Image (cartoon, rainbow over all chains, first blue to last red; front, side, top):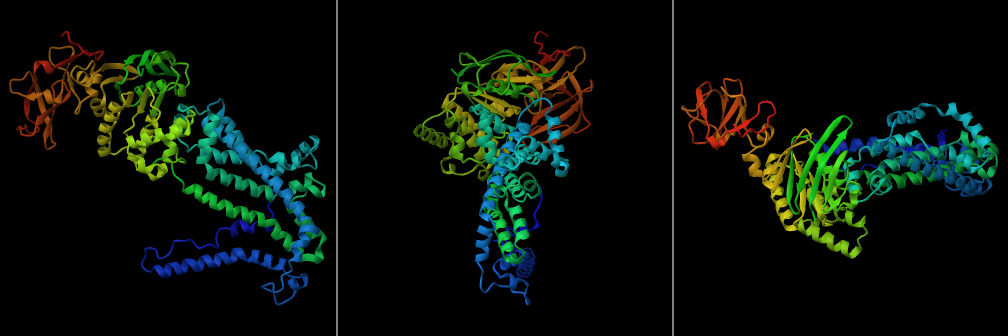
Length: 301
Length: 332
């Protein structure tokens, strides 16, 4: 998976800026001093993390000439919203964003379903060579993507999937990582629950869907999040297996924007903001869900 | 209708025989305890009734049906697990309701039955909590409520009290007994705790190494143990079993039946006297090298450690066991 540097900052941005709530005057000899120090540290760290994002947002609202002018403009006094309109329509960002959403959603859904099923088999079912097969699964994690890259390209081509959504999505529908992560989580579900459910007539599928998945929601959420981020930030693979503009994803679109609109640097910045905005939103939504999932009931005390 | 029968039931896991040729009848509405040390096969026997394990040989009947080939959910049994096995993501209400939902009981009936079960176990105010928000004792009650909600023919309980602290265990013990009396349902109860077995069971079955040792009402098992194993498994401190001169079999006497008596037939040397306040335990070596314990009431004057004494017991309190097989030997 390729990691686009510009798309990454929001991954951190969602977390640090919020000072932890309820951490007010805690027990200690000089509570106020401690709290003050803690907040100063947090504010400094947040500033470091947020600075590049802030600059990107500011620049996306400036005229190109203002971006290179000195002194640096720290605030867009006359925001150029037109930059976003340019990126959206002239830069085809509406198309790219839709493509990225389709691809990332498809991959996330596929990986989640396949990982849940595989993890369940490894955690709950008895079958010959279970251990061996699991090790084989794990070894796929240790092979770098570059090794299989060209083989995969050839496979996709020979299947006639070149330049299609299938080429963008299908190769990523299953991962050893997801199965591994979820197996670890599923193994914490006590076998007594499986048996209790069996006594009430639950087979494997219903047990999985109604008991294991709800209990393991935090792990599945985390796994899905990783899948989505990975898919959204892909660069090299979609570049190689597609050629038509209607299939381009947002990361490639962003690069293309840079290539074609040198004189419109602020439009590139606007495109960057558009590219990371969806992930920022998803992270914020998911982090709440993850925290809620983690605090909801353990099995027994 | 809540009768349970094992007929020549065996269960093997690979080379290990967990249950060996078990034949046992449990009457309707009986509180029946399977007692034994861990690994004796009692849990496996219970799990075969539940349908969680398939017997390797033999027949298992519930009511008047052979259930070997019947799915767990259609056996009309409910099980209480040692860990309680509550679904952590469901509220107490949904946990109790679970067996009803999977059997497509309609909403109105469900509500009514859950209410009844919750009332019977004093869970009325906890219905909207999650298991994590409950104490151990409350979780245990939820597990019981989930078992009784459907009014099954047989309750299967696998060490349901062992995760409770000592005080709560005693209290819950008597509550379980009265619950069973009210419901008039067969209970098959597995435990390694002989006190639970003695106090709760109408009848108890003692198992060891997969083999049934003895079945009977608690007092009978206590008074006439069928083997050395049963004699020493039931009772605290356990029955003294020792060799005496001129006999090839073993003599067994319960500590409370053994007395220190200058005219007694068995010489012994005292090596430790423990005082428990209300009673004393006098530990002795016998000449044959066995250790025995004499249990004395608090007021009795005890010998000092090192004293040479003689031990005695009333004729009716002396048991004999075969030295080889460990089986009771009443002919001697």
